[in-house]
Length: 415
Length: 112
Image (tube, rainbow over all chains, first blue to last red; front, side, top):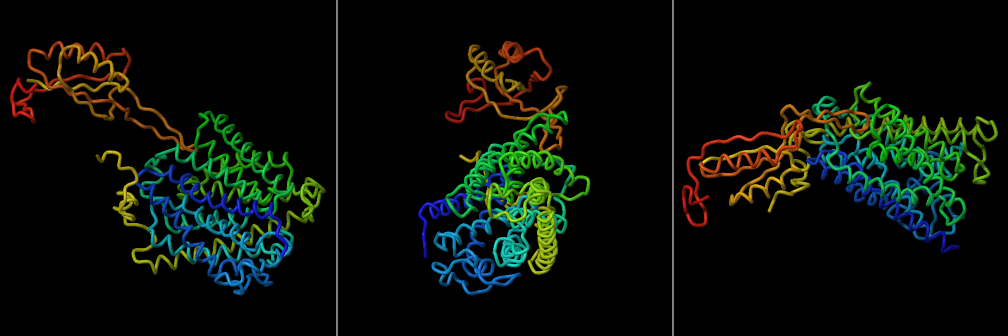
C-alpha cells in the first residue's frame, strides 16, 4: 500500500481536530443552559465519545464503509478485522493508512448524535439518552453515512455532493432534533419562564473550539494535504466570518444590540452551511453561502415560537436549516474549477439543474429516513426505559446535574 | 444597641467601608443581594428573545452599634452611599436585644 506521509499526517491531525469538536460542542451548549443543568449537557455530549467509538469498532465502520451494497455495507471489517490493511471500499487509491481514514470518519459519527443534545436540553433522562445514542448511531447515522460518503452508496452514485457531511451530519441530526423535541415535549415553563445562558464565556470558548476543529472537519475531508484541502480550509473560514457578520447585521437591523451569542451562533451557522460545499466551491461563493446562512438562520431560530416546539438551543434553526441551505446552495455554486471531482456543476456556474436535482434527492432521503426512524426509536424507548424519556417534574426543577448525576457544577460557596 | 442595615449600590461598598472605619466602628458585614425599589431592572436579549430582569444587584451592609453611635454612623452611610440617582438604596435601624463576642463570651456594649 502506498503511503504519503504528508497526506497521512494531515488526516490524522484532522481526526484529532474533529474529536476536539465534541468537547467544544459540549461547552458551546453547556454555557447556554442554566447552571443547574450544565453537567448533564456536558455528559450527554461526552458520552458520545464513549458509545459511538466502541460501536464504530464493533460494526459501524464496517457497515458504513465496507461493501458494495447501495443501501448498507457489510460486516467484513467488523471488530476492526483487517481494518489496518483493507481500505474502505472505494478509498483504495487514497495513499493513507486505512486506519487513519477510519479514525477520521469515526469522529464524525461521534459528534453527529451529540448535536441533538442542544435541542432536548434540560429534560431528558440520561439512561434514555444513552440508549438513544446507541440505537440512533446504528440505524440512522450508519446508513446515511453509507449512502452519501461511500462510493458504493446510492446517493453518492447518483452524483449528490457532500464534501464533509452537510446531509450526513447536520441535516441528519437537525431533523432528529426536531422530531425529538416534538416527542419529548417542552421544558416546564417554556416559553414563558426565561432560561438565559448561565455562562456565555463558556459558550464562546466552545465556539472557538468548534471553529478551530472545523478546519479538520472540512479541510480534512480532502483526505490529503493538497490544494483542495487548502481551498476547503479557507472557504471554511470565509463562510464562518461572513455568517457571523450576517447574523450581527440582522441583529442591528432589527433594532437590537449586537450580541456575543449572536456572533457565536452566526459563525456556527456559516460553518454548518459550508460543510457540504467546502471543497467544491470558490472563496466568493463561500462568503455568499456564509452570509446567507447567518442571515437566514437568524430568522430561522424564531420559528420555534411560531410552531410551539421547544428547541432549547436552536439545533433545528442552525443545523437543520444551515445544513439544508448549504446542501442546496451547493447545487448553485459547485464549480469544477475548484475541484476536478465535480462532474455536474452548479446552476450559477453552467446553468445546469442536474446537480440541484441530486442534492434535493439526498436531502429528502436524509430527512425522511432520520425523521421516521428517530420517531420510532424514541417511541420505543419511551416504553422500554423505566420512567420514560423525561425526568420527573420535580427533578426538572431541581436540575439534572443533581438528580441525574449527583453532582453540582459550581460549588463556589463551599469552603 | 442597634442594628443598622443599609442596602447600597455594589460599587459604593469600598467608599462606605472606608468611611465607617474612620468613625472607629470595629466591624461590619456585607452580603450580596438582589433587589429593586423604584429603580427599574434591565432587559437582556438572547437570540432575539427578550427577558426583563427586575432585580438589580445590591449589597446589604449590617453594623451593630451602641445607641450613642447610631446617628453619626447613619449620617456617614447616607453621605458616602449616595450618588443622587434612583437606586441608591435605603438605611434602617432595628433594635438589638443582646450581643456576645464568641471568643471571650463578653456581652452587651463590651462585645461591640
